[in-house]
Length: 240
Image (cartoon, rainbow, N blue to C red; front, top):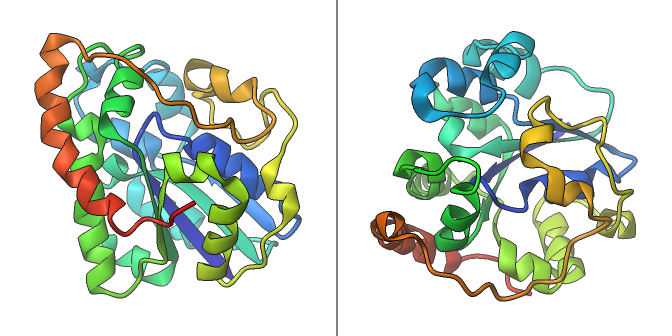
């Protein structure tokens, strides 16, 4: 079985990425299986909308999630897990050595700009970029990183980047991966109503448009701290 963990930062195109793989007839996709584990191990004052719902409906024990969900049994030959890198707390990372792994990155200034619309005062651990570099180093050291995908590169040329990615994963690219029906989808986590409004209006990867904005003054230092981590990862990302 081809198990694929996609390690993303928040406010990335990870949901669209998940929808893309959901179009494959040979694939099952799973939306953020470690979210409740993360919420159960962090300060509730972080203000994640729908926290109580997530904790009540999803397994809270990360070790059980690893064994029963990430390493569990499936009927399709391909299983893709949409993951947030910052969810990797208080866990043994060795399970990643039994899966394929993709890093999904985005310019952190864009992440912070988007994230702060839902949670006004994000911190470094919320943005996840520093953790992504840590996971990148772990996977690279163990020769278990298949690819780094940058959101901008993917949106510039979805067919090219997805074709390269599928080759890295030992899969054949499927044209169905480029489009999907708009609206909520059965693979959505229960938190979709708080976070997925934009992607629910989409029917494919939206063309990349350069965003012009300034971060609020209190978030500018966070943007500056995150940038070197992102630039290190971008060096090795697939190109459009």
